[in-house]
Image 1 (cartoon, rainbow, N blue to C red):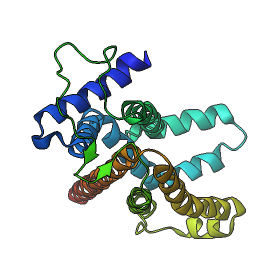
Image 2: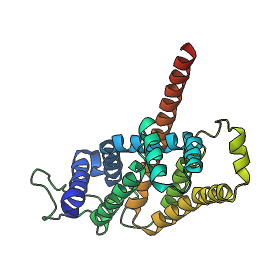
Image 3: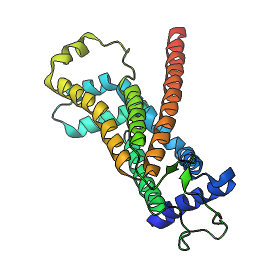
Image 4: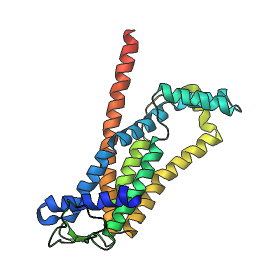
Length: 252
């Protein structure tokens, strides 16, 4: 199943792009493959990022539901899901988006672990294996090797994306009840955890990218950059929707 749905498609997509790219540049082929994967997953990714921000915006209402139905897990779950449905929030979409990336990483690893070589059991009948294939990306980088600078680029790009998400809706005014919660231990603990994750994940991803073949770092960096552009789009779209909603309320 892994070969059918991940390894074979990734392997043949890389070969397809290598064939149509001048000088058969593997690096450009990986970037185009990343872009294609991103386009395929675009609806899911946009839904995931949208849900992340809508959940942050609805946090006050979620806290009120928790306080109101404390000890009644059934009612708490019902009211929370009702709120998610009302605000069109898909709470599990971000988890699925993260999970789907794992087999893609693994497939890329197996495609490049020994270099891009002819594999009869993987190649599609309508794909030609390129002749005189050069294994250097951009003319200087062997994607089967490890490069520390790709780890740095991966970590930096992930930090920028994580920082944008952490700062989302930070200008939303908090009411008096929310300010009183600042002294609550759970709130302080959650904020400390959020700060640690903001720095911890980029560091771990950067170290991982530096330890794995360069193709992983290249894919990860490009993917993070595309995530940043998606984030810009989603934020602008939500701001426009909020403006229209507030404007309609004012008219009514």
